[in-house]
Length: 121
Image 1 (tube, rainbow, N blue to C red):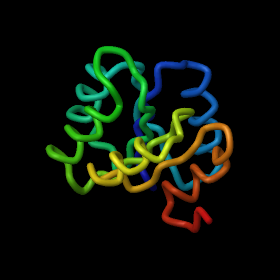
Image 2: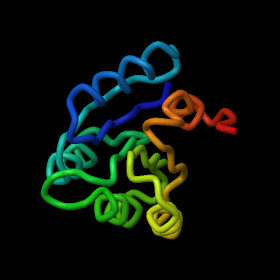
Image 3: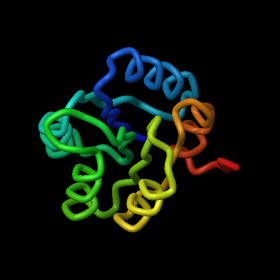
Image 4: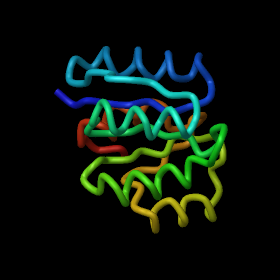
Protein backbone atom coordinates (compact mmCIF):
# COMPACT_ATOMS: atom_id res chain seq x y z
CA UNK A 1 0.00 0.00 0.00
CA UNK A 2 1.36 3.41 -0.99
CA UNK A 3 1.91 5.92 1.83
CA UNK A 4 1.01 9.48 0.82
CA UNK A 5 1.59 12.92 2.34
CA UNK A 6 -0.67 15.72 1.06
CA UNK A 7 0.71 19.28 1.16
CA UNK A 8 -1.69 22.09 0.27
CA UNK A 9 -2.66 25.27 2.10
CA UNK A 10 -6.36 24.58 1.47
CA UNK A 11 -7.86 22.18 4.01
CA UNK A 12 -10.87 21.41 1.74
CA UNK A 13 -8.50 20.47 -1.10
CA UNK A 14 -6.44 18.24 1.23
CA UNK A 15 -9.64 16.55 2.42
CA UNK A 16 -10.92 16.03 -1.15
CA UNK A 17 -7.58 14.58 -2.32
CA UNK A 18 -7.43 12.28 0.72
CA UNK A 19 -10.96 10.98 0.09
CA UNK A 20 -10.22 10.34 -3.57
CA UNK A 21 -6.99 8.48 -2.83
CA UNK A 22 -8.38 6.38 0.02
CA UNK A 23 -11.30 5.26 -2.15
CA UNK A 24 -8.79 3.45 -4.37
CA UNK A 25 -8.01 0.93 -1.63
CA UNK A 26 -4.34 1.00 -2.67
CA UNK A 27 -3.30 4.18 -0.88
CA UNK A 28 -2.99 5.21 2.76
CA UNK A 29 -2.80 8.88 3.72
CA UNK A 30 -0.07 9.10 6.37
CA UNK A 31 -0.28 12.85 6.86
CA UNK A 32 -1.26 16.28 5.68
CA UNK A 33 0.48 19.64 5.87
CA UNK A 34 -0.59 23.19 5.08
CA UNK A 35 2.83 24.86 4.89
CA UNK A 36 6.43 24.10 4.02
CA UNK A 37 7.69 23.77 7.61
CA UNK A 38 5.05 21.19 8.49
CA UNK A 39 5.65 19.41 5.18
CA UNK A 40 9.35 18.89 5.84
CA UNK A 41 8.69 17.85 9.44
CA UNK A 42 6.12 15.31 8.21
CA UNK A 43 8.59 13.99 5.61
CA UNK A 44 11.10 13.21 8.33
CA UNK A 45 8.59 11.65 10.73
CA UNK A 46 6.27 9.80 8.36
CA UNK A 47 8.56 8.71 5.49
CA UNK A 48 5.88 8.69 2.77
CA UNK A 49 6.39 6.99 -0.60
CA UNK A 50 4.65 9.85 -2.40
CA UNK A 51 4.00 13.54 -1.77
CA UNK A 52 1.20 15.48 -3.42
CA UNK A 53 2.40 19.08 -3.37
CA UNK A 54 0.87 22.44 -4.28
CA UNK A 55 3.15 25.13 -5.73
CA UNK A 56 1.82 27.93 -3.55
CA UNK A 57 2.04 27.15 0.16
CA UNK A 58 2.89 29.40 3.14
CA UNK A 59 6.39 29.92 4.55
CA UNK A 60 8.16 28.86 1.35
CA UNK A 61 7.04 27.70 -2.06
CA UNK A 62 6.10 24.23 -3.15
CA UNK A 63 8.95 24.49 -5.62
CA UNK A 64 11.41 24.97 -2.75
CA UNK A 65 9.83 22.04 -0.88
CA UNK A 66 10.15 19.91 -4.06
CA UNK A 67 13.83 20.81 -4.24
CA UNK A 68 14.38 19.85 -0.57
CA UNK A 69 12.45 16.60 -0.85
CA UNK A 70 14.38 15.48 -3.93
CA UNK A 71 17.67 16.41 -2.28
CA UNK A 72 16.96 14.63 1.03
CA UNK A 73 14.66 11.83 -0.16
CA UNK A 74 15.38 11.24 -3.86
CA UNK A 75 13.32 8.03 -4.07
CA UNK A 76 10.10 9.76 -2.96
CA UNK A 77 7.64 10.36 -5.79
CA UNK A 78 6.46 13.99 -5.93
CA UNK A 79 3.26 14.95 -7.70
CA UNK A 80 2.73 18.67 -8.18
CA UNK A 81 -0.99 19.48 -8.00
CA UNK A 82 -1.70 23.12 -8.68
CA UNK A 83 -3.92 25.75 -10.23
CA UNK A 84 -0.79 27.52 -11.51
CA UNK A 85 -0.39 25.46 -14.64
CA UNK A 86 1.97 27.39 -16.84
CA UNK A 87 4.84 26.08 -18.95
CA UNK A 88 7.48 27.81 -16.81
CA UNK A 89 6.30 26.07 -13.61
CA UNK A 90 5.96 22.72 -15.41
CA UNK A 91 9.48 22.99 -16.79
CA UNK A 92 10.99 24.09 -13.47
CA UNK A 93 9.26 21.33 -11.51
CA UNK A 94 10.32 18.66 -14.02
CA UNK A 95 13.93 19.92 -13.87
CA UNK A 96 13.84 19.68 -10.08
CA UNK A 97 12.60 16.10 -10.22
CA UNK A 98 8.79 16.25 -10.02
CA UNK A 99 7.38 12.95 -11.22
CA UNK A 100 4.04 14.43 -12.33
CA UNK A 101 2.57 17.90 -12.73
CA UNK A 102 -1.22 18.03 -12.60
CA UNK A 103 -3.66 20.88 -13.00
CA UNK A 104 -6.16 20.85 -10.09
CA UNK A 105 -9.00 22.01 -12.29
CA UNK A 106 -8.44 19.84 -15.36
CA UNK A 107 -6.54 16.75 -14.16
CA UNK A 108 -7.83 16.06 -10.65
CA UNK A 109 -9.05 12.60 -11.68
CA UNK A 110 -5.48 11.60 -12.63
CA UNK A 111 -4.21 11.77 -9.04
CA UNK A 112 -4.85 8.12 -8.18
CA UNK A 113 -3.13 6.85 -11.34
CA UNK A 114 -0.20 9.18 -10.68
CA UNK A 115 0.28 7.74 -7.20
CA UNK A 116 -0.24 4.08 -8.11
CA UNK A 117 1.79 4.16 -11.30
CA UNK A 118 -1.13 3.74 -13.71
CA UNK A 119 -1.53 5.74 -16.88
CA UNK A 120 -2.31 9.45 -16.50
CA UNK A 121 -2.90 10.06 -20.20
